[in-house]
Image (tube, rainbow, N blue to C red; front, side):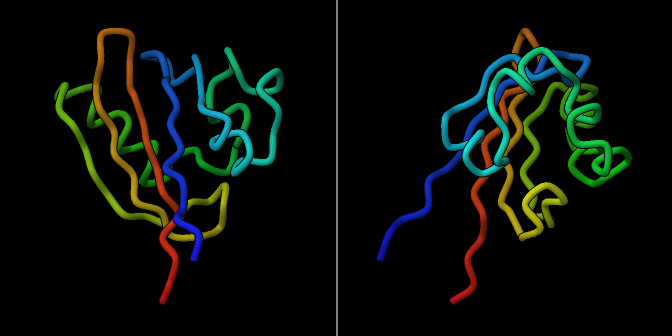
Length: 100
């Protein structure tokens, strides 16, 4: 059985994508040139006001890690998400949750 790969990306304080792992682009089904430098809500408008965007803002406000399990509106599946505030913004990792 193949182990799922955790995907990573970095956002600035305005939630613009700064960098991402190849796994992130593969899961999102979009090439880097379409996403780097753009706000996530511009690239994926349906996430505006979502639980994940609220978690991004909570991590930035409190400068504390946030962990949650939520339904990804981009992947249309449940994901485990870890959000870490860093100097430039946020480092985010996520892993699709597979049912057994």
